[in-house]
Amino acid sequence: MKKHHTLYLLPILALASLPIMLGEADSLHPVLSGPDRAYLNTRGVFWCSTPGLSSKVKYRLIRDRRFLVGTKISLKGDQIATFPFKVKAASDGSYQCKATAGESTGFSNRIKLSVVTPPSNTRVTFEPSPPVVYEGSRIRLSCDAEQGSHLNYTWYFNRKEITSSNSGFSIAGNKLVMEKVTLEQEGNYNCIVWSVVQDTSRYSTSAEITLTVKVKISKPEISISVFKDGDNYLGNVTCWSSTGSPPVNFSLLLDDKEVRSITVTDSLAAWFDVPVVIGLNMGEAQCQGRTQVQDLKSDTLTLDIVPVGGDVRVEVDYLYTAEAKLTAAKLSCHISRGTFPHFSWLLNDSILLSESQDNFQPQTDLSHRKQALILSKLSPENSGYYRCRARDSYEISGPWADSAAVLIQITDELLNSMAQASSCIETSQKRFTEVIMIVFCCFFLLMLAAASACVYKMFDHSQANTISFHLSEPESQSAGLQSGTLSSDVQNLTVEMTV
Image (cartoon, rainbow, N blue to C red; front, side, top):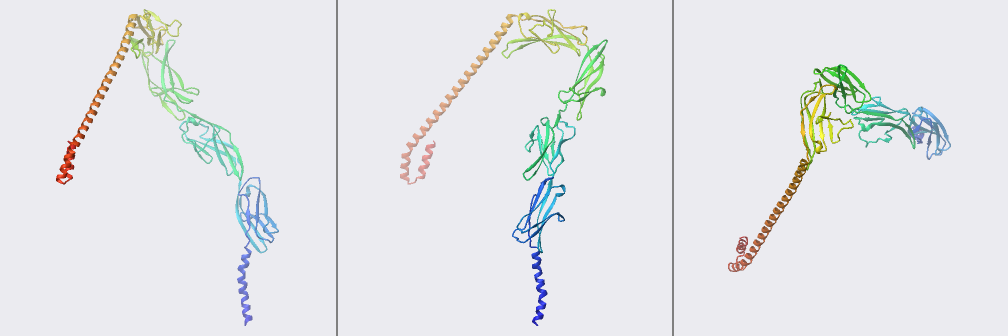
């Protein structure tokens, strides 16, 4: 009977021992170590070991759970098995070590190896291209390497590194963005692409690219001058902008119709010749300036050339210093009509020559096309009859329109009287200042006396109150002894002190 029970227990014991055997089969715990990054075409090594195991172990290095990389046999489990390999593009993947000792097998930890390609052939590109933009525009620069992986980027402006503290720049990945470019951001840009594997870095530097920032043109202006060509007259119309960057396309519009156009590349001005008829309104002229980002028009100019004529007169103004000292006399020539007048001055019917000629009198100055004559050094020699005359500037031999003569008489007595008047004014100013000071001092003394009187009165009143207090004190004590009440005495004392 016992024999039969033993036969029944044998399968049960066998089944019970199966988990133990299975557990021994999976009891190996190998450890894999090695790089997680490696440069392409370099040498790499993985190491696998099973610490604490003394039996013979067979190691296999597997990539991505299916590719066998290598096999090693170690005499003891605690000995390290090495798996050297050359890093290729296909080496990228997840590595694991499989250890086998007898019937036992175990798998190690996994290591993800990334193959790093060093950067090369780096260059900077612009958007828009070419790198010529107007201020206020948006521009984006890209740092592109022909080859490379796991890359980092560093930007440089005029060979200085651009960091997050530099305003006006935004860096994202390999992009450098300027939302509104300014003139200060004009210059040379380049970038460096780099990667790191452990303590080894590889670099690739781009060439410098120059960014040109152009200035927007100001509102165009228009002017005209007239000259004679044989028997005909031509108007030379000038179109220009005071600020901006060329090239600029300037057009001449007559009554809103374009008649001429030219593109200037090295200046901000253009000239157009148009035929004109003296005394006839030729219409409204306008200048139009165009760039890649602008289209502006000037104010209108009426092409109506009026000849000089009508009344001509001279006005005289005397100029004084702040101390009322006569220093100069200004003579102005006024005409009733004329678009392009040319003025000339005469003293006692002798022509005062222009500044460009050698015998121009040094004590006079001509300004604004000789319309004003300034006698800057007054002396009796400047006395005399002055008159002006005007003619059309485009008619060299044209007739003059003369003004009446004006007498300017400068004598020593006049200059002395002016000096005396100036001295009197200065003396009056000094005396006025002295009077003000005396009044202020008297006012100050009066206020000081009033303040002293108030202080004295307050002091005298304080002494009177003190005497009253001492005189009333025995009476209040006596009254207190007779009545036997202290409160009424205190009230009497209080009233007496406040009287």
